[in-house]
Length: 322
Image (cartoon, rainbow, N blue to C red; front, side):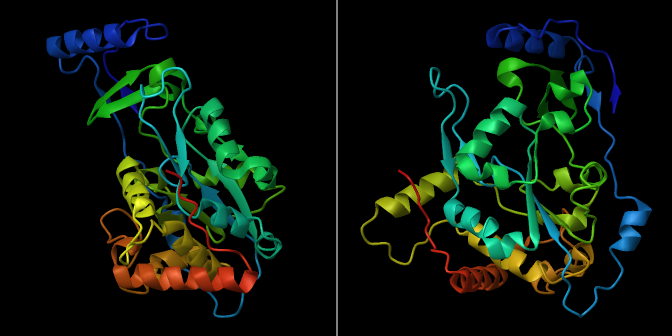
């Protein structure tokens, strides 16, 4: 990433009002004042070649690794400024408790390592992890936050405002969406001694295609769980007559996918060959129809998930809170 002219403003202590005034003033003077150019990272040739190796048909017993994002995947946080005294409220995605019970069930732990990697600041990541996993957070292989993304101080504090425009900020703006990437190779290298994993064993669960640009075939893209979706779930909860309406059941579908992946010996190849979409679409990168957008495919994985939960004696509970 190459920096052009950088505004000399003390953003460390700048107020929101001063920030907006400064941004309007400098951006109107010169469109390049706050402009940053990003080079889009691409998968390596070695990675792409390895994802073409055909998976064996025999049952594979190698351990797998699930890398979880938090906000928009397992939970949703209230917008900034809505809770001035208590901070941002957090609500779980439906079936979060069921998903947690599945991940930490003895049968699952026999073949699956689970970790968290969020682009949020470490303090906020710790709060979200505690909310999602409670005392069972110790079952996670590790928890990574923004500081594990190899960013410079400027990049670490960036607030991505739109195409080509980024500001270096801390404090209130620190967890605003900024363009970051999750290089799974960093995980494979750093955790290799205690948790040996590779493209053959790893799945990243994230709602952003951009995060998985370096290893697109190790990615389970999921629809973002946002306030709009949550309001719909609350509406369903409050209706006495459900009339066939259901809660967001994405996490149940993911359980079905994981239960299938546990016997694959090359996860990246499995995804690249279109198995996530039951062969309807090759690959899983941006531009390819997401598996969850096809109702037949989504229903297939939901049924697989419910079957796995039933076999393990895990209760299916949406646990939507008003």
